[in-house]
Length: 342
Image 1 (tube, helix red, strand yellow):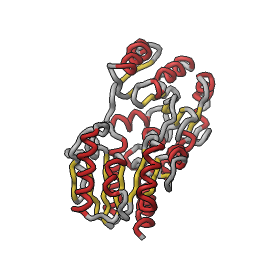
Image 2 (cartoon, helix red, strand yellow):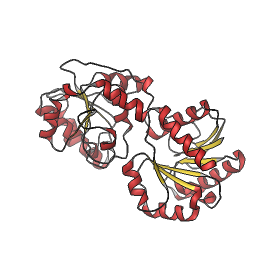
Image 3 (tube, one colour):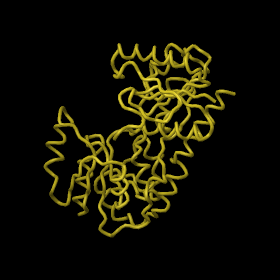
Image 4 (cartoon, helix red, strand yellow):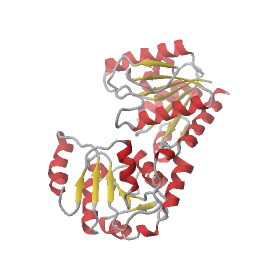
């Protein structure tokens, strides 16, 4: 089968540092090629994913109208040149506008909250030739309200790239690993760690401007270097593996409906329990009392931190392998392609 994938134009595939969706696309490329499919990619011109053909986007800004028009033309030209059996978009659905009426099978994957208006319009134009996927049931539930056929296919990790740690020291730290902004709950993680007298290691990038910059300067930075609260900056894959593996838990008490945070699956792949909140996809990722805890207050979180010894880290690792491994997810996409193609 000939499969044409697309990724957003801002980052190369795979990304040089951060870029969760771009990592997913790269894993999908490799997995599909290993299964004998021919794969082409429409993406950032600096992409190095080992596809049979790379079609670079003409526009580099997803939110720019002129760039959107250029990228419609780019995708249309890629379809004419590559002649795929299926087009699978991880980018903007508007780029597919010139081919929506075509009977060519199309998949549109959402890793963020879908727009009701856009989904409804695309479903009406494309009909049965278009299938939507969401990275969690919570995303699919939102999408189905607007129309179209939806299927949940989770984001994935490569478990073999994460070192399983079956046991950690009694004084192992809590780890906050995410972008440092209010909706990710870094301030709450600090409050929890201080109240239960646990070391907290914070890793991730932050903004120096706007509301996010103010949040960093006023609520996070003043806490660093005190009460065993430590900030180590951004981390690469090797550092992330070591950081998560040594943690008693990954503590990211979100304040928004998380579509699917790949870092949660990465923590589980290391055998590290997750402590977060029951919003968005988290109840789908974390089984309460098995893979971690979903907390509703700071006091609740403190109690759950003291119960971490009741979590079997082997269960966390197995959860990642059975539900969020790249092999499982690539197979689910392959089955979806086959159902559309046949």
